[in-house]
Length: 236
Picture 1 (cartoon, one colour):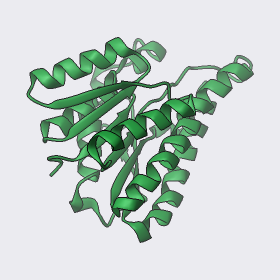
Picture 2 (cartoon, helix red, strand yellow):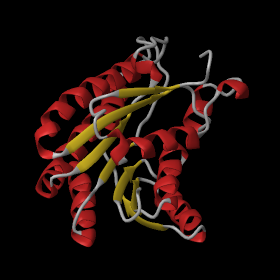
Picture 3 (cartoon, helix red, strand yellow):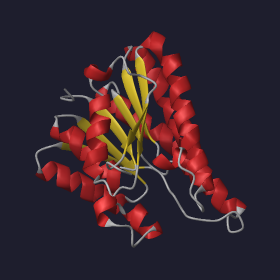
Picture 4 (cartoon, one colour):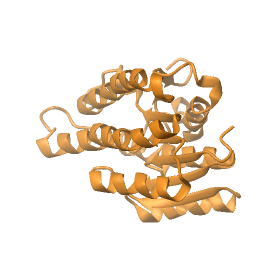
């Protein structure tokens, strides 16, 4: 059970990240939600507390390593441990190669790759000291399904899958488990910004992804470390 687990979720202001915060909080976890948008974080916190859960917020720009450091320090300092880290912050702007300016490429890399590296590296000594911990990195079906305009995004998520597998091997000797969850199309603002006409009957709900993340963080999945779990609608 997630009861009394301390869970850090980046990208916790909306969409999949908010659903993950809600899922852990519903099971009794202490949730630290992080995102750039303080208003969205407050909405996450309000929804959880109104449902009887425990949610704390920490505005964080995951592209700034010092802010990631502050997030992990604040959480570990407050609760004395971090049981679960979920790297959910992500961006997926659509741009064909001719339109993919270096500045946009760097932003895609920063949010989807660099931030995962920095959060994992910063939380690792905390989890290693307590001899336990779970890291779940949110990937995407785009990591294996090439799609025009998403070359940079798909490549970034393929990196996440490889990073997850290698990091899981490093964590075996110190009680740290690492997973990726790679959803198909999820009913979020990020999806609708790119594909406003995507068929409703082909999308997952954020809660579908949140339930998988929550399951992986439990003891029942302790022997499955290193896996990338693909989540998609039947027939997708």
